[in-house]
Amino acid sequence: QVQLVESGGGLVQAGGSLRLSCAASGRTFVTIVMGWFRHAPGKDLEFVGTINRSGVSTYYADSVKGRITISRDNRKNTVYLQMNSLKPEDTAVYYCAADTTLRTGWRTGESEYEYWGQGTQVTVSS
Image 1 (tube, rainbow, N blue to C red):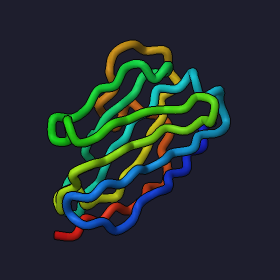
Image 2: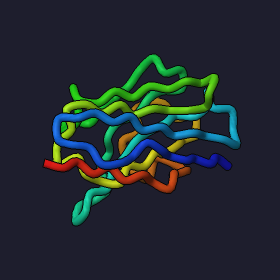
Image 3: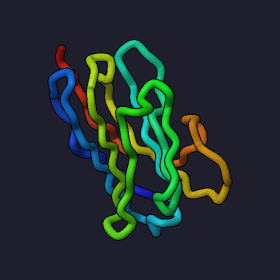
Image 4: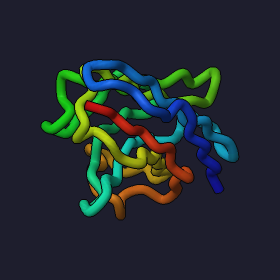
């Protein structure tokens, strides 16, 4: 079992920045692939990005590429989502997700993650 707790959401003006955190527990963090998703009102759950176990490699959705950075601190069992140049269309509930399997390759689908956090709301005002 892996428990995930997101934090850092809030209200920000367009053009601003926000950093979300996701603290994990229940399993050795360095063995877990982490991802971020978001769910905007009236839309499907959307993949945002993912980071490999060591934190060396990341993969982002085209919709956010260049504006976000995912990082992790394996000593603190935490993954981060740094979002810059925020737009109103970035408004959503943001979820972190964890996959403990040993599969290779980027995980971009909801079904590829086993554990999910409760989500944190990000609202970008125009």
